[in-house]
Image (tube, rainbow, N blue to C red; front, side, top):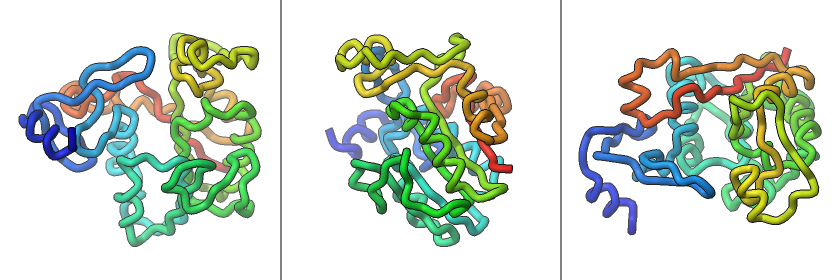
Length: 233
């Protein structure tokens, strides 16, 4: 079903996608192992994490007004065209496989110079990378001093330590244990300390606690989701 038809079918104003301001009677379900109801925006195809990041950027940063050199890993459909249209930023996308990537690159061996980017977005990527420490080191290397990197991951906040097991290679087993067939770990709360060990200053931003309960519901956000907002000293 095409997006315009879906949007018409879900006509209403109960829920709003803050990325484009469009409202619907409900959002669509989404998920791999465990499907979540009312989470996928019919218009931008954003999920909870995308809408949370958008709200944070527009309300708490100068991303939409200040000149910056931006590197975006595995660019999300909800953001790609909108970020590309921003005239005040120099916007580069990168990924090994995405057709939206300007630069095909391995996150563990980036072809960029030290201290090159003011802002880095690398969201829901690290859980796919066997050597995530090396990837984090590369992200730190190419970020400018004073620069900001937002590095979202799927995270179990009830889990103190990250779980990974290289012997689990079967896609169905990975999906059952890690939540998706191509994930290699499930991050716990120690994720933030892992980033700090690389050198990042990490703000664990619980942005849904700052927003009103009405807005959390209206925008279909995930209460308690933490935004890892990282800075290079």
